[in-house]
Length: 195
Image 1 (cartoon, one colour):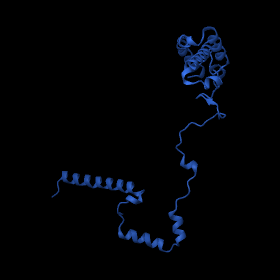
Image 2 (image 1 turned 135 degrees about the vertical axis):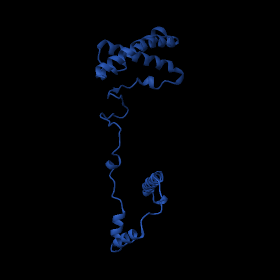
Image 3 (image 1 turned 90 degrees about the vertical axis):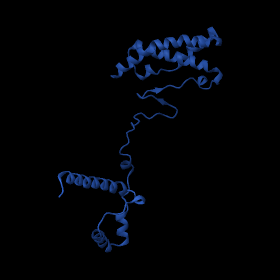
Image 4 (image 1 turned 60 degrees about the vertical axis):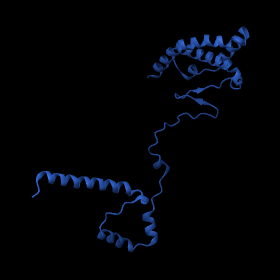
């Protein structure tokens, strides 16, 4: 006689085998090269063959061919943010849609040994940006990314008055001003954009 524990163990084994077998069929079902032997009975196979015997080759081909998939269907899970403002060639857009102005041409073509000059120019530019954001208490594109003209003119005045030898010292001075204004400008822009 079969006791209760043996019956439960047998039922659990049958259920587990069914789940594993179903998972195997699902796993191997999409991959014909790794297909598992079919678990169809002979009568099921015979009825399927009988249904297809009357079909022509073209009908069979139409059934077996997958419908063409459009690009929209293929990319339905595309989570990239669409580009709302197309940048013209050579323009650099920020994540808020502002167009960053081009650096002066002399700064873009400076040899590596004169990189301190460009770093001073960029520090002056950032300092003007951050000061303007804090002073105006706003962060529109024309305030956040102004023209390089003011920074370039300031750079030319500094170099003319103090010389190229003092560029590292001047850059350190301007960088301290930049660090002092950075947090306040970031907070102003966040508040202005409503974040």
